[in-house]
Image (cartoon, rainbow, N blue to C red; front, side, top):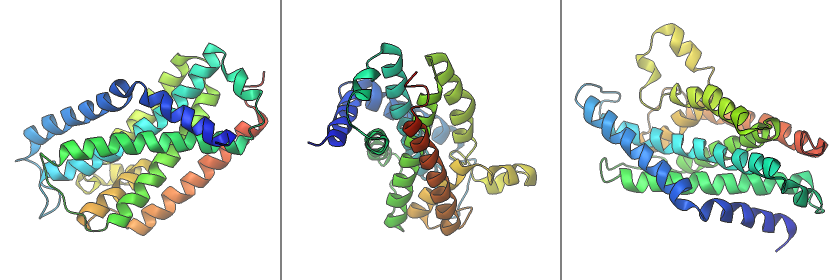
Length: 251
């Protein structure tokens, strides 16, 4: 293996060694959401004419799991290395900031997709789904995981202790995820909150992903692709810049 491949392997192995915590636990959490919301609201909420509410929930829960776990992977790895002091061993290697970026974001994509696949496999027993546009499913899953992996890098570089990282996740990531249309269609919201939802990039990731299953969405998948792609470029550029200058890791 080359240096970046070894770092990628190390990061994948890091979460896989504790898969019960990093993979099984998020799958169980998503299933609890599905069981509770699906059971309570199945007969009371109808989003699309030909789609059951439980089926509508599944893509949102899958994508939510992908995004949250991709973010958690890179951010938790970096903050742990900083606090434990073993980050210095990476700084001694000839790896460039590009190698760091590929390894950390690549492992985040792997973890996000593994958890998302686990949620999907379990969820289809409750609500079988169709694949109207599978290419869109793959594209938004990959872009969303990469975007959150890069955002996790930024959060991990910025945070100096676990409290700061928890605040970033609890006050930014979690609200934006839950207010992105995971459990509802924004078409059912008042005009003000519909406009506010369109400012949330998480909405476009979940809406575009859901389009791949049902062929229906609240926004054009091409618009969602453009916004998610632009957000990925900006986030990746910022993460690579911070890595290049050694922000909070070389002092």
